[in-house]
Image (tube, rainbow, N blue to C red; front, side, top):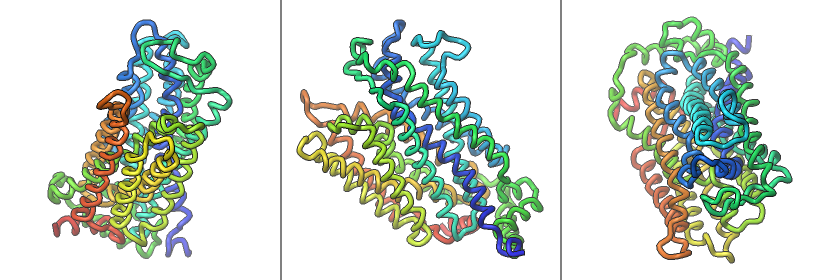
Length: 488
């Protein structure tokens, strides 16, 4: 009886836990490349029918992001026509196919272990397939959680999705670390030299290690695709397709029978017009959502996450993989700060303070990078930069994107915002290495301070953007968003 009157928290947390597995896979898939990229680079350098250049390696390391752009762009269409639940099942299957295909791209069509241009194309196709899954999950997981969660804890529950993303990255850092074991990463000193540039002692990593790293994702991917079959569709989607009774039953399980009828009525009032145009609530609404996504990537965080072992190695650290794992632990800890403060402090204070902390860290890296006597200051600045992102732009952007748009345009608006996020991610990730390696004169560190100095400036601009244009949504229901933007 208590469950019927007050709702079941255990039921809510169970379905949210399943949904955030999509976030874990998001983090796992995007970070697996950090441990595998050197072995993969050395493997394709052995190809005899083409030269695996720096440009090719940059593309291959980032190719999943092309799929992310596609997946996020079609997420609104799938979420609206298939529903949130079925779209997440599709995402899970794509993760699973990508994991097995990236591990064994030779399957059926190519000779095992023989790197060729055609095999490189097939490998990238599998990575793009996984990227489509990431793009779908990145848009629909927070949307799903936002649509089932009560307004008073919605921010906290959506923040758990970001926690799952960072936890997925930490898990894959550990998995890569243990897969590597006593083996060593290949030393690729100069492109175009083939085997001459690869340490012979690293051959296991070149032939096998990277395969295990990509293949390990099949386990959580299969689990997610299976478990998502057992969660309900969101009440707001059910109302949009005329299944009011089913929506009310789910609302009663989550919120209690006393509140379910009122919530259902509020949803129906905002669902009266199902064909509202994207700009019905003004261009500012869409602009704010897009720029939240753009700034989340433009501050440069994913360039750090994707290339962390390489960055720590360039700093002269003895065990870059271990430092990468440590950074993952720090990231997890500071993501929890957002989870437990977002409903108390609000969205805007966390975003602004995080922007300023990131600027401090980025400028610290810019000033000290390359100075052997200050490498610990550089490492500390990098950790400040990363930690500041984790309690602010990491989780809070997803919270806002999941809740800031009115019901009638949410599917399309979220898809556009997240597509811009992945486009920005691709630009930042693919430009990081060439920017970081820029030199004005022989051997100078221009690229190092310019790259992090630029990220620091963008962080300051992001803080100003939030202060002036982003509305505070703490405590507001999803139905309140209609009134919020109509006032503007």
